[in-house]
Length: 488
Image (cartoon, rainbow, N blue to C red; front, side, top):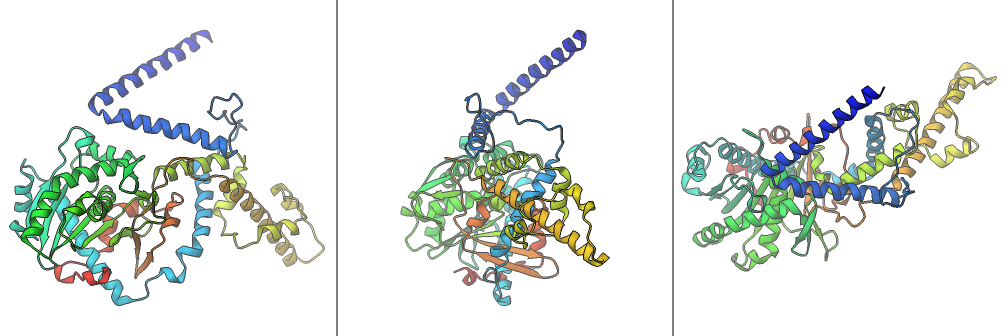
């Protein structure tokens, strides 16, 4: 036994040394990892503090870290735990997500939205493709050569990721003219993954804590991107507006670029840039697959005028924030602490919805006692077989209702992450679902989307560019289709 202990100790030591060397190597290549690790450590500490504060963990030794949970020799798959959270979320969203006031009933207006949003989506995709396949160091010249949908003289400025330090970094973007609509268009691309992942873009996504921005706080990485883009592009915008009086500004972006585009629009509308932009210039923003990016310290439920967030179906990024990720971990912890049996968890996850059953009424019917699963087979009555089955079904539903009540009570103990700032959407949300027909929902109140990380089976798939390509297939193929009156 001592021999094997020495071997295991040696292996553990080697693993520790390798881990340290790998981290040091990565830190030398990507200094941002050090800051990212600090954010992660803050998150871990906050997770412990909030679990203890919510009463879903203990801290017997008083070190601020929760004690190890007592093991009960059972393995519970995380998918079952997430399944319970998913079903509670899905049930709670029925009242507001499917409310009749959420649906756009005007087919003509829906067509205008799709063609207008679709045109600028296709433009964004084309610009991203041209910038990211360029081989020349002169990005502007390369873009003018490869872009066929815009005259060369109307491609004013282009930038490709090139900085070594995140503080100077901004994602790919381009400034173009749309003469038909009298627009100066700033297009901000998403996280660069082709031909290889651009780590500065990735770090910009992951710098998800907050820093002061205008009259509130913003996603730190995206605020950095916003400042760097404004510094580079504002002189070109001003000179273009001077040469083309009466033109409007349109800012568009996807994913990382969507978050940054909202902050850029806010800076143009309310920040120092507003002082130098010609008075009366209309500024709009179309952003696709956008995360929560801003919280106002002064205005409750703040919305920046003329900012429109376009979402495809169950795109999960619209609810992704540091506080919501922390909340999800805490909810998982709360359910683990219940020590539910796997059979009960499976019963709830794979059953049809039982939320319509009044849990208090079910509790009274059962005499205040939880019906154990093992006792189901012992239920006997003198009634006929059909009555027997009805009673079995009633008891089953009562048990499920009682279990659901316990699950909900556990989840309700969890709130947002303490003093972490809870980011929101400074825009109205358009959610499009396309199968046989297209269904459009419009939400002016976006708080339900940012109170929790919304778990959906297609939350990752629907965020991908091909999801939006599917949505806008056949729409917005020509600038003649654009009707900005629908978003005024």
